[in-house]
View 1: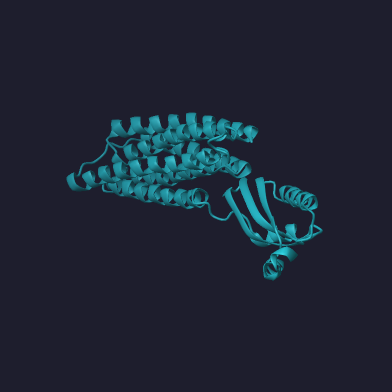
View 2: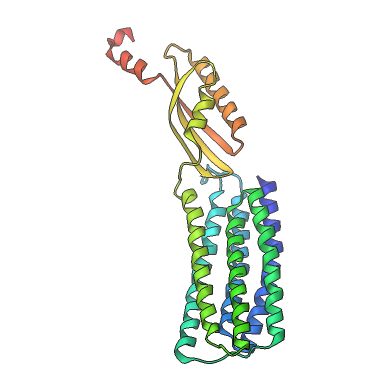
Length: 300
């Protein structure tokens, strides 16, 4: 896991420097030209850098081993970092809507020049490369923070395309396209926030992370096991904790039952590499428990 976190951090560091360069270029160009859509897009890109910082902090905490206060480890801090990215996006969303509304109400035309259009085109290409790299690494490393950050940057690609189109439109005498492009930026940002929330909520809400039937198939393939129930699994795609109730013959000696539970655990861990731990409660099947409850105490 530490090696995985190290690779995630390396990706975040590389992407952060690229995002910072793109953001500063857009903000400088936006203020120089007075183009509200470029300024909005620049601050949108700046949150990519802030999101990278949040991600690095989250990953540095998530890689810590379990301790007395965190017996299940710190893996969820990585997911919490993706939520932090969403918060940054919401702040930018408010700023973009404010700037676009002001331009609609008070008017004004930006100063557009060919060099500015060329610079926006270059930042667009950089964003496309960043999204491709970060998405690929996020899927390979099963990292929510990388995938969330890639989605954030993907919204940059879409909005940069819209802003670039607006700049061309302003160049041909349609200044209204500038605030309209800013509103389109806001729509893309809002969609990115929604997707991040969708991916983070199952992990933070302890949604079931495994197929019960697949677990039962492995469990019931172990000799001596009569069945299982109350199967629960929580965590993230690559960091799951599983617990279940295991049915054994009520006459099984304690030492043998204990050995069987370890066989079940080993088979589950081998079948599902995302499992960090399996907790097994041993009990007789419901029918045997019901029969035993009807007997006199001395005959049990």
